Length: 171
View (cartoon, rainbow, N blue to C red):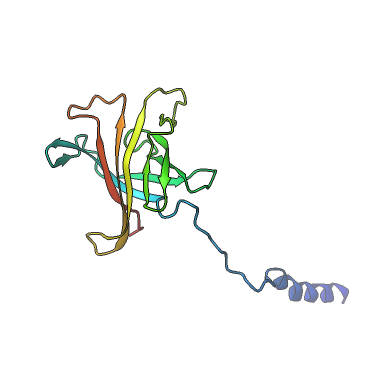
């Protein structure tokens, strides 16, 4: 009889262990100090091959780019990281959150992805996030634009790449 009583008691008590007594069970997620510049972006890299003609000279197409907050979370700097999708660069850049602009000309800008001793100079200029654009599909999303150059580039048309794209939406 004693084992039966313990079994009944266990059956009644165990579900209670998985029920929270907290009144506010919703997780509150706050944006970092660099939102909405930071994010997951789909971008293309193009070179101006003649006046107002931009081409993807390597035929890379759309690539993935991450822009994220630094550990300082001070709203003044971001990481721009292509994870090797185009040139294997990761650059710390200054950001101005009041006008959603960024550039990496002040912080050294060396590729830090695979070789921290790499002397390749990576420079980001004219960075800008434009809020609430419309994609071809009609979905609303933010857009990004910046120029990037690499000191080890031997491209036939020059070394300034115009990077443009949109925030990845998952659709």
